[in-house]
Amino acid sequence: MGTSLNIFTSGCSATSKIERYKQKEIEIQQLDTNVVRFTAQEDTTSHKFEPEEQPEFDEIPSEDIKIDEQKFAEEFANLEQSNIPHSTKEEILLEIIKYLKTPYKYGGKSTAGMDCSGFTSSVYMNSINLALPRTAREQFQIGEKIVKDSLLFGDLVFFNTSRKVKPGHVGIYIGDNKFAHASRTNGVGITSLEEKYYKKRYMGAKRINQFED
Image (cartoon, rainbow, N blue to C red):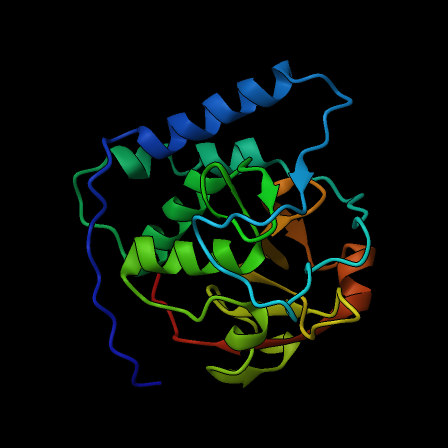
């Protein structure tokens, strides 16, 4: 595709994104295990949803395939400290890491809480200055349709998780049959496409651009 991207480097300090992830991990470990890590309340400071719009999940997803997100984040610690300019793919990965462990919040679009489309739009805007529509339904209308066997890093993957809105959920494919997303179960994290809940509800994928390594 011929989409033009305006790429810029984040102004964060060298280890800020990795350190933020580690701090979130510590804070979560300190929480009482009975605390619910999501809320269906709207974040009116980030996005005003129309009355007909509905929460993206009809039920809390089960996630049984464990992904070592800490190992994933630590793999890029040296990359963030490097003075060598990052590739587009690296900028996106580092932005994803910044949001890991952010709690789920319907309508949210910040590190205080975010939903699925808030996550995808924030990642692309803050990493490579690429604007996406705000909702999963709107994001499903853009880009090139991609079959599952041809997924590449950065493709948007969509799921039928709501009876009211289709698609109800969106994430970012990161390779190795995994995608990053804001989950009602675990907040922002990494999930396998083989996870039973998501595999059953997979709707399709869109490519907004092909990102180089």
